[in-house]
Length: 136
Image (cartoon, rainbow, N blue to C red; front, side, top):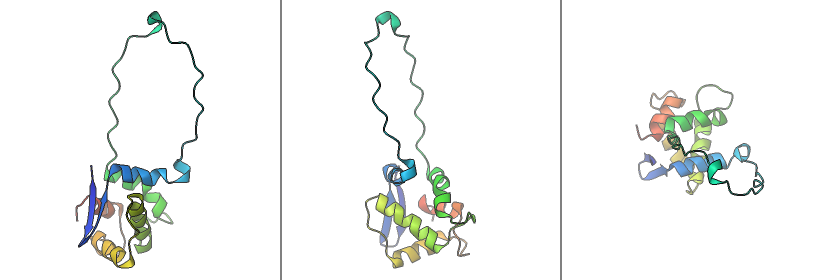
């Protein structure tokens, strides 16, 4: 799955790895290292339980899942919407997590205008999800 966000000649393409890299960059998301388990002798054939099928893999997170998971990090004051500065910070973090240079002010202004579907100068979760999904 690739997520494309285009503004004229400027484009942002995200992959699940880039979205997850953003999460892994958070200090609170880092997993502590655990020591390896003590070594044990291999089990005897009679000790091995019959094999069971592996559970199905969890589906990859969607853009909506990612927006919902990260919303509180960027919605300062829990207002329920993002202002231009908050959206700029989020898009800048996404670009740098994807190995792209930080966006300039002109790009961010265009991104805000494109994402603000109802032109109320606020970005809702729905507007951001639609924009990052290529819906605008």
